[in-house]
Image (cartoon, rainbow, N blue to C red; front, side, top):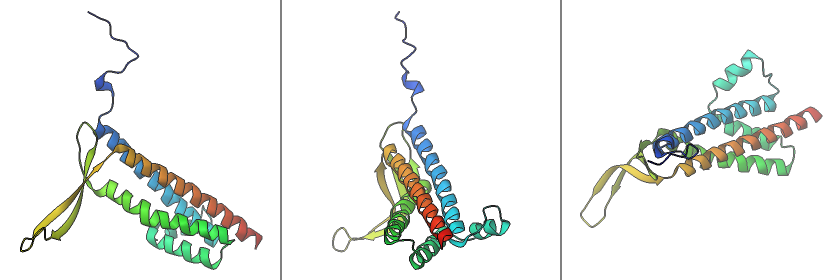
Length: 180
């Protein structure tokens, strides 16, 4: 009987694809929450609201993120510190709104058909009517997509990078606001 090397994990100690997927989606949720906080901070910078003021929290909690994006884009355009700053702001908000947000919603709200191994199957609920051939109609209620855990972790990185850029933009705007 041979000895087992205690430094080498056995198959049972490695996380399954399901465990890795759940952990990655958890990171998406954590980073998304931090991004929402960054939007709140940006709103405070735009309007000179105090971080400790109850009214600030009430306002930020009752403005949807899509509305915050519209407000930040409009005020940033109207009172831009520089053309470069405005281009960075526009690029960051567009990335968040068009790329990151929809994928985050899919990863969080789609059904996951989990297995022990990758790739995992992500099922989006969507109604699609198609005509594969003349006089034939097919109706489907789902769209399935193979997804690697690395794709979810890539989204975590994109959310974090967008949040960091928004923080830099908010800092730049705050400095601009105090100069004027």
